[in-house]
Length: 432
Image (cartoon, rainbow, N blue to C red; front, side, top):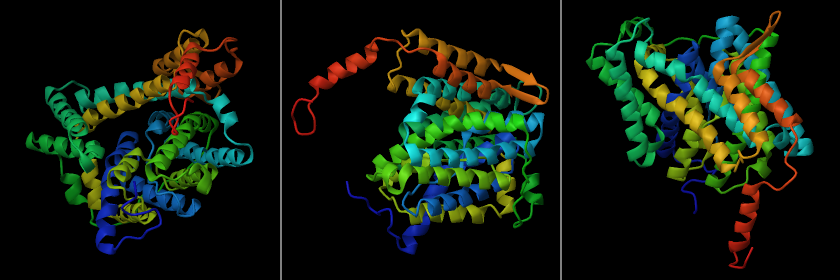
């Protein structure tokens, strides 16, 4: 199917601006939710999201129309490291993440992808993604039921329930653009419902100035933070590969070859390091914006670049940042119930679609250990160095995958797929 606007086409201004705003709305809810949950500044997250996208476009030679926003995979690491050592050390860990991306990009350029498949097979990736979602589940429930206080409150539960219902209905029953922004619609609906119940405090909005500078935070470094973020980065690298593959299919162009996976990963990495240097959360390519492109068939890098510029401009409106911070905690709790569940479910999807055979004790052991260590919050500490939760689970999963022997015989699920392939005609109508 021919695109409405191609990758390198520059639309007329009267179309360009609304198309860019559409991408801004698509990424907005998720991008500001990460700093909301981790104590970072939403305005800074918007700024680094826009800046990171422009860096990505520059690194890929303007050939990949991706948008980069705040990554959910690092929420737990941001929360734990910020609590244990301070936000500055969490930013230091995120800076190193970007450097790891660049290192992996260099290795991919030199020797290809096979080594990454051995280190991070689907059984490890899928299990760790489940841990990311389920490990955050208690946070979502506490936000929804306690609303930032020490006691449960029926009003908070009602607000969270209405927010969740709106988001679920929007995601399930709407079509077109609305179907890719259920987070934004859910937050807006929950906010209105909370306001009707008198649970919205606009004092901060009234006191905030209209314009101002973005709050920046210089990073600091320690081994615990670097290790925790580095291990999570291995999973997000795998997610990057998947996002670029999906975007290639949507845009009908092989971005793995042109400009090359090493350049997309390098762009993501530099964007993440720069974001952390400014005090913003790690970046990642956004599926929401890929969804917008799939619906509209507008693949122009000028449009995603325009959305990045709009995000940067919006970050300097302090009243807007104060309005984000006025969103009641139960509203975000309701959204998080859906989002964190979706993250965990995407891990299950990875396992299912990869045909992981759990009659093989090797796979069963790897997943079991990752899930218990990650969700159980296991920790090890040597002096000032601490490793726990998701990071520890990922490390142990990688080690188990490398040392446990594989089955000698052909796995049943692979054999059945081969048999099926013999019966499926190829594109020329001949037997495969």
